[in-house]
Length: 360
Length: 178
Image 1 (tube, rainbow over the protein chains, first blue to last red):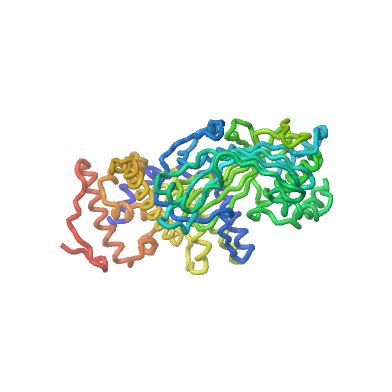
Image 2 (image 1 turned 45 degrees about the vertical axis):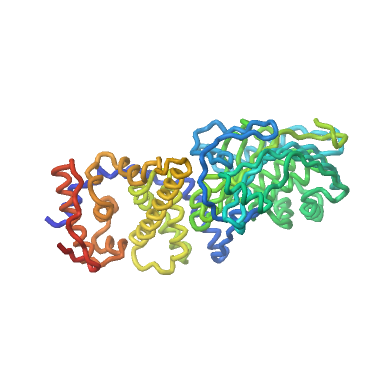
């Protein structure tokens, strides 16, 4: 008997451990996402952007995470969301677990969401200052540090009071920086990677609040339209972080909120703009602080590395409540254990106040 | 049909087979990421494809899987050093994959080379010429490897208690030496 025939007899198809893998007519959501990412690459004449990390430099790390799952930041206990999870790293929060909306497309979910939001009553501002309390955690890395590795996560809780004219106050409380090991701690300190220590309190005059240039760009667009098609045109006039429309929509809503509570019709229009985007996906999730959220996300794959950029929306109001940048697949030179979060944020409270030391 | 449409057709037609190929060689949690990387590389090299895309994709997948295995083993060794034990406490990738092979325990008694040869023409569904292309060797060399792997498999099935010893060497052209 020929060798091929004999070995096929000895190892029959029914013994194949992968026989049930990938069953079904449709590709998995991950496969569709990957194909979509490649399609966009093809549409840009294969222009590949290494937009994995837009706010930090990439480096080679010599250390592996050892798996601490929680840290304390200025009195807040950060806990991973209570879902089945792969391992958390020592210096990044757990990647959020997403649950798809079974049997419904992203467009259907977002349109339904918009329909509910636009029926909400409009709110009035109780004071000229938009107040927001937000915690965030991002992975600072440096690729040109003497001694090599410098990687650190800096948990931060930030309170901000800002008026429509761009004046206000920002108070940040920094938790202890978290390093994979002592060597990276020394390298990070020498490189000056640490954003700050203890508490930082800053006052700003008109037009001086952080990120004001972005606000100015939105102001030039003119009054924001509640017609989704017109709003989409206005969005195109302002650059979006990482090129993702979800970031454009979140930035637009952030800009709008500086003038007072965002009208439900504008929130609904924003959700309809997202519904019309082919590259947007949605899922249900629970935030790091244990709140239900609708995650609206986009992915980008480059050389085996997939970055998932997400904006979390409050299901009750349609307002953004947080964000996550997560990394999957090949971590490449970043060399963190994947999946990993590169940046996270969640709004702890928000409202309007009359003074820069009031809280809602 | 333009190049993207041909690629998409290949993606949709071959994705499941590529996933199954990787599933037989990697821990389950690494499969999706590896599949993603396979098709990223495939798109970049799409212009070099000649003929049937599936064996070509298997060739890419084989290298992606090998890289993933090496990376995971390096990480496990490093983690072991960080813990002070000097010994990786994470089971080797091969061990995880072999345990997932379940009923076909006999494959655990064979070398990785023999397993690869056998899987290509059985569960991976390739003929000898296609399998040779995946391994980057001549058809004749592949058939020599297959013949040896068959004998090792039969020995292992006859007496699964001991690993099959590698008594023969193979020269660069695939001929077997003693």
